[in-house]
Length: 116
Image 1 (cartoon, one colour):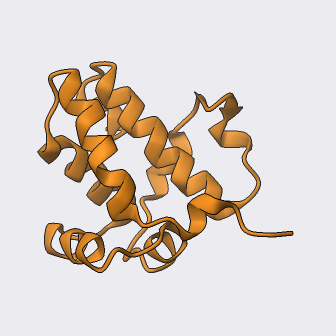
Image 2 (image 1 turned 120 degrees about the horizontal axis):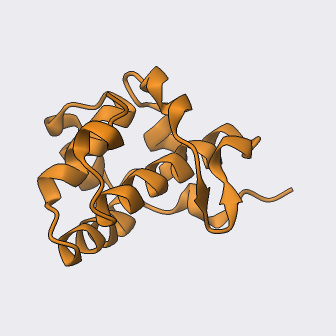
């Protein structure tokens, strides 16, 4: 079975859409970055380096310094699919990120988004 197209897509290509979605709802790029850092364990400098290198999603998550164990608390539907029921690990990580950005755009408090 061929890999899903999103795996080979550059995170840097999708990142501006995450930021735009957040900013349209009065949120900030800093909040988007905080969510990504919380999920993956990248520092701000490491995140920026990954974006600059145009790392693909599969590599981005495979090389993440420390995937946050609290990500298992992320529940809900993204693109018509329940994130907690996604079997394939990389796709689940991508959808976790999508879900967190959706929550940010809907105005949810950062403490709740970051499962504190």
